[in-house]
Each structure stands twice: as C-alpha cells, then as structure tokens.
Length: 326
Ligand code: AMP
Image (cartoon, rainbow, N blue to C red; front, side, top):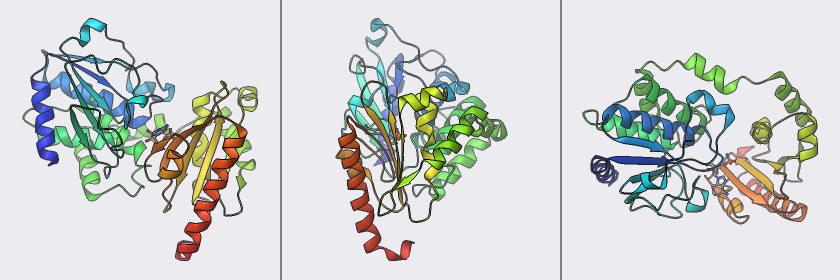
C-alpha cells in the first residue's frame, strides 16, 4: 500500500515543474529537517524544476540547517505541486496558501486526523517524517538523489523526533535508514553540538526551573513559566518551551508537562509521557500530537488547573492498572 502511495507521489513530482514545500507552525527538527532535506533531494534530482518553500515562521535554534522561510509569490502557486510535511491538520500548516496549487500532497507521521491532501501518505507508526522522506529517497535511488546536505537535514529530524532514537516508534528499519544516511558523511559531532549545547544563561534558567518542578498527587510533574519570569531572565519563548525535557526522568512521574505563557493571554502546553498515552488528553484541550508527545493551548489558569487534574486522574488510573511499571 505505502509503496503504491510513494509511486503516486513520485509521479506527481515528475508531472509538475514547480514544487512548493510547507510544514507545521512552531517548527521542530523534524519539520525543518524534512522540508530542507526533501528540497535538497528534489533540487539534486530534478535540476530543471523550481523547488520553493513557503513557511511563515521559523525556529532560531535550527537556523544552522539553513533558511526555509522564503515566501513564493501567488503566481508561483499556479500549476504547482504543494507538499505539506509533518502536519496532521490544516490549522497547523505554516501558511495559508497550500490549496492554491494544482495538487496537494500530505506526508506525515501523526495520526491521520485530517487527510487533507489529494494524495495522503501517512504512517503514524514512523518515528519521524524525516524517516519517511529518507525512506522515499532510498527506495527510488535511480530517481531521487541524496547528498551530504540532504542526508544531514533528514538525519537531524530523525534524531530530534525520536529523542535520539529512544522512543517506542524507533524500529529496526529506523536504524537501517539512519545508517544509510550516515553513509553520505553526516557530521554527527557538529550536529549534536548544534542541537544539544546551550548558553550558560539557559543552563541557569533550567537549574532554577528544576527547583520549581511540582508534582500532582499521582505524580504528574509540571512547571509553569510566566512571561514575567522568563523575560526577567532574558529567555526566549522557544528556549522556555524547550525546557520540558528537564522532567523526563523522574521515577513515577510518567506524565510531565510545561505551561508557557505566550504573552497574548494564551498558555502553551507541552505534554510528554512514557508508557501512558496522552494524546486524548491533549485533544480534549484543542491539541494533539503523538501517543507520548503532544502540544495544546489553554486560555486561563482555570483551564490549566482542569488539564492538570485530568492528567493526574489519567496517571492515577494508569498506575492502578500497571503497578509493574514503577
Ligand atoms: P510540541 O510539544 O509542540 O513539541 O508538540 C509535540 C507534538 O505534538 C508534535 O508532533 C507537534 O507537531 C504536535 N502538536 C503540538 N501542538 C499541537 C496541536 N495544537 N494540535 C495537534 N498537534 C500538535
């Protein structure tokens, strides 16, 4: 089935002179890596085609991969193939012109809540969209070419979305694909230095936050980062949001989350878990994502408390059913 879909995607690429690639808002390593990796592969493979990117926002910490925020003109969309990567729902697409092309392709590894493409290649068991793009290129080596740059972008998304190959979606196939990308000469030492070193200021902020971690009765770990506190420490919204990982190894705290004030009255929620699935919890608050990594938005302290109470009840129930996991 997926082989069939991939062939149809290849045919649609072959049949269009202009290809425009977009991904989700608030991009992460997988969104940026798959965008730039696919763009690099298509430019290498089809030098006569116009490969354009259309994204309305950016992530500073991924700028080392290259720029992917260009904005094609409305005219560029005429007769174009539009490929949207790593994005479950239309509302999360970075940009609002994705319907203006001749054809729309969705390639994603989130649950297929909205099959918005004319062609939808969605495999929610995959560890990343980058893994799917790499797999696509490696499966059709006579048609799709990779080089060091393309492989480096794709490898980046594979590393970041799999928690450095830790999460449950990592399969033997994931590691074989990663190995094939390394063959192109990915500089992993440089990559990990870019991804995982941080400023002294951020390190200190994380230390302060560590002292502020709180636990609900069942053990849900959480932190609230107010705009006032964040701004006083000179920390960006993105840097603040990225601190969710400091709670990821507390024994018994199988769910952890950070609330970050966005500055417009809304509060960004980043939910993470091991063993327990939190996707339905996130969906109840207008969010979504994967089984164990979701995002959502709440709009008041009352809603924040309600979400915490729901997370606590979910964890309490899970612990009762799975005493062996502690
Ligand atoms: P984040 O905490 O923003 O890194 O999100 C974790 C995962 O959930 C990523 O795969 C996101 O693409 C996805 N996600 C985040 N926010 C939402 C949302 N509001 N709706 C659906 N999926 C989301």
